[in-house]
Image (cartoon, rainbow, N blue to C red; front, side, top):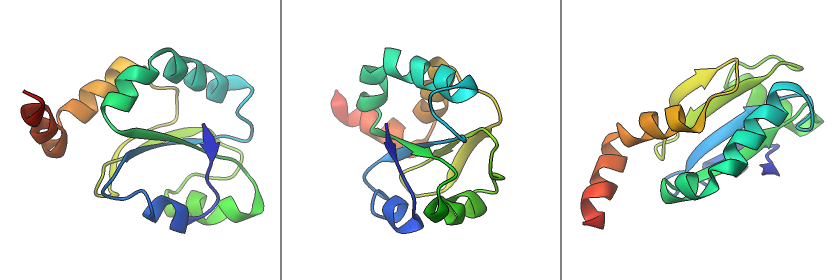
Length: 118
């Protein structure tokens, strides 16, 4: 999982990926560690759904990302963005991968992708 520090980085992923933002003071402890563990165990399912995983810490540049998604510094949050860049889900707790996949699979763009696979 790579770290994102600017809104421009997020904008560059638009129309290509669904973005899962993990906000936390540190990715090696607490809910962020739990979330990362769950995501790592299901990386194939996420890749199949074009999900890009990004970590947002408390570094100086990341404050604009935190402000944009209304996540206070020092707090944990998970925010799922669609390929259109819009917020599709947010949680203050780790989110199981099956729930993330279920949310993504109901999105119209994902439904079209699944139809094209067959």
